[in-house]
Amino acid sequence: MSALQVVWFKRDLRLVDHRPLYEASQHGTVLPLYIVEPELWQQPDTSLRQWRFIRQSLVELDRALRQASDEGLGGLVVRVGDAVEVLSQIHAEYGIAHLWAHQEVGNAWTFARDRAVRRWVRQQGIPFTEFPQDGIIRGLKTREGWKEHWESVMAEPLVPPPKALSLADVPSEPLPMVPNSQMDDDPCPNAQPGGRSQGLKLLRSFLNERVRRYPRGLSSPLTAESACSRLSPHLAYGTLSLREVVQATRRRLAQLQSDPQKAGMARALSAFESRLAWRSHFIQRLESLPSIEFENMHPALNGMREEVNPVLFSAWAEGRTGYPFVDACMRMLYNTGWINFRMRAMLASFACYVLWLPWRAAGLHRSRGGRWVCIWRASMWTMSRASTGAKCRCSRAVQGWARSESTMWSSSLSTKTRTGLSFGGGCLS
Ligand SMILES: Cc1cc2nc3c(=O)[nH]c(=O)nc-3n(C[C@H](O)[C@H](O)[C@H](O)COP(=O)(O)OP(=O)(O)OC[C@H]3O[C@@H](n4cnc5c(N)ncnc54)[C@H](O)[C@@H]3O)c2cc1C
Image 1 (cartoon, rainbow, N blue to C red):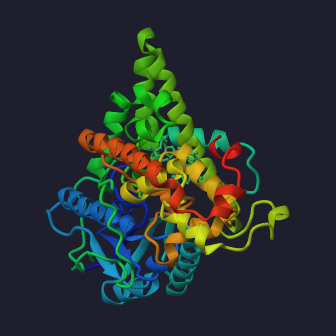
Image 2 (cartoon, rainbow, N blue to C red):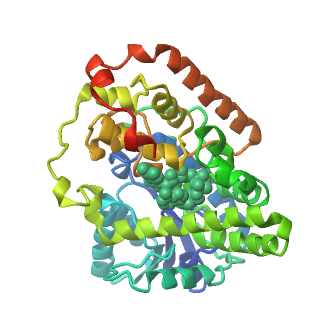
């Protein structure tokens, strides 16, 4: 077997609009690789509910690769271990002619891992090509012209999925049920399923029908779960490309704009489209200022709230602050993995301003053995059901939680907090 074109899949679990895969397929036999990194899954912003979404997406990716393969052979090659060690083994056994991947804007851990991989390929003399995605620019010095850049990236034609892929006949390890045996169980009974087919279903139902309810429905958790697109996990793990979603939105917008009776829907779609741009804007912010993973954006706030009050913290994280609305939202997040952006902001504000908890401690709660989704970062992939039935059940469920909480709300939080802290003001704005 001649040396291989290795495509390293990370947060890009698709064949469509996948430049690394396309380019690799033009150069020779491809080894599509997914590395399950146990150390990654020890990081504080990871959870089993995320892994389940990824796992379902990998199963579909494997199927799609087999269908695209010229001989129906091959498929996704899964390896468990440290990225450099896995690549070294593959290189020793089969030879890597070229490594291909998308640039990842992850966290400090993934950045360090990517640097280690880059060091290793340099030592081995293996060419490594990383393509940007989502309009993000590495090493950006100034934001001037960034929006124009984003627009031009989004307007580029989608990269076609490779046809008659020549895939390497390399054995895969089985996809593990858990990526790290030390992870806590995390049932998430109403989690949103992964996989590109689910993402496409959501995109279609949103653009054709659900967007109608977007402007009025996105604020309340009762309506938001079906009125919002629910695409964030698919964008975060790349079962759909951002460009693909932007272009589908623009096509639909063009159809609607030609019909004056659909002006409301067209306005809703424009609002959605601008949120897709915000998404890249905030990712670019993290790329350009990675310290915000750990530090206050404004140094004047340093030292302001460093202490974690464990009683208040667990009351918040477990949805038993005694404030029915807060607790119902937190329980919805726990049970579905998803909460809409206004309630996300409300939960974050409540933790920081009302309970005076440090933002990072609250955001990383899950890392200390809790099972709650990180509100700030990991929830990028937030989840819920795609089917209408499940959505209705969830809406009723959050109403039910709110009702049951209101009867018992005074029992759970300390008197000092109930009486000593204001609940009004900015937290619901
Ligand atoms: C405190 C706070 C923390 C958040 N943390 C995350 C996060 O870690 N990851 C994440 O993807 N989103 C985050 N958001 C944005 C948003 O709340 C979620 O992405 C959204 O709830 C996901 O639901 P949806 O896919 O149905 O979004 P929709 O309302 O249908 O929006 C479409 C897409 O636009 C993007 N988007 C929407 N709102 C925002 C926003 N305010 N900022 C940036 N992008 C946005 C998302 O990719 C989303 O999937 C956060 C918002 C707040 C207020």
